[in-house]
Amino acid sequence: MGRSPGCDESGLLKKGPWTPEEDEKLLEFIQKNGHGSWRNLPRLAGLNRCGKSCRLRWTNYLRPDIKRGKFSQDEEQTILHLHSFLGNKWSAIATHLPGRTDNEIKNFWNTHLKKRLIQMGFDPMTHRPRTDFFDALPQLVALAALRGQLAAACSPQGTTLAGASTAAASASTAGDHQMSYTFSEAPVTVSDDLLLGCGAAGDYENYCHGGSLPPLADLSDAADGRCSATASSSFGGGVSSPLPWPEFFPDEDPFITDFL
DNA sequence: AACTCATGCAACCGCTTTAAA
DNA sequence: CTTTAAAGCGGTTGCATGAGT
Image (cartoon, rainbow, N blue to C red; front, side):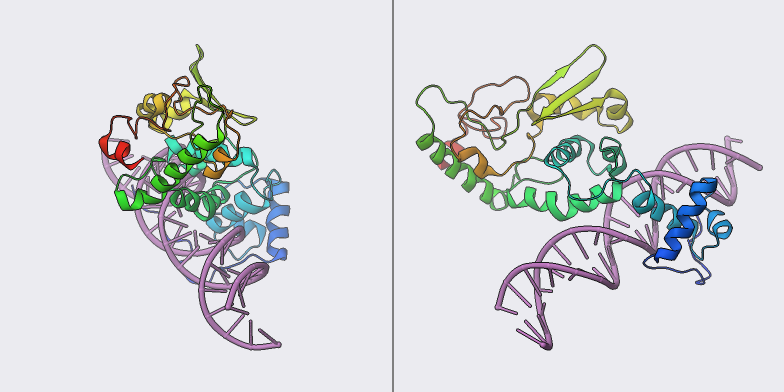
């Protein structure tokens, strides 16, 4: 496969931020004619830009269906959830968030979500607790604190630890080969097509059986007296455990037992 | 008020994928 | 089937802005 020629090998085309006049030209042209061939568009629209730049400007900024403003909590949960098995497939993730562009989601991930996962001691790529001790230390400390707080705050009758999530997560495989995940109020439907198309089908089983973390939430949420939170440490069906993510912190693990 | 640092976002770069010749 | 152009995608950069000192 040959690489496409550079966008501006002559060095004559304009780069950098778009002016309102350029936006107007591009918008007007596309509204009248559609974008057709991006390569020819700049010439036809009277823009001194390369087609690639025009396409990017249109898809990330000028498109009329773009949603602006802060990401809602539901959108945030959806991104986290989809990223846990799709990885950095921003365009695939974007298809589940109407009005959001892949670029916007990518930026949001890199500037907000990734940092929060790291701060909480999770590996942002696997969404699992980091395995090397020193990197995972913040999380272990947080878990230890959480355990103590919960022991103090929860009522005596059989408490099921809420894990680090306040969201209720449920997964079910239906006959139509679709998975439905529910976080807060936002149901997310992921079709087999998407999973297979992204090569994630192998991870699917792992995901459904607790191989991935529940959606991200502030650990402090779980300890503020809401012991009735419905999140379970296992996606498979609410198995009670004194520890969140028992697959990572088995009760019998001498190190963990000793640590706690 | 001036400066520095951190953050967020738009845009670019280069690689991969797709489709047409 | 091979080659090539075009489009798509993800990583990265650089600028604008705001917060802190």
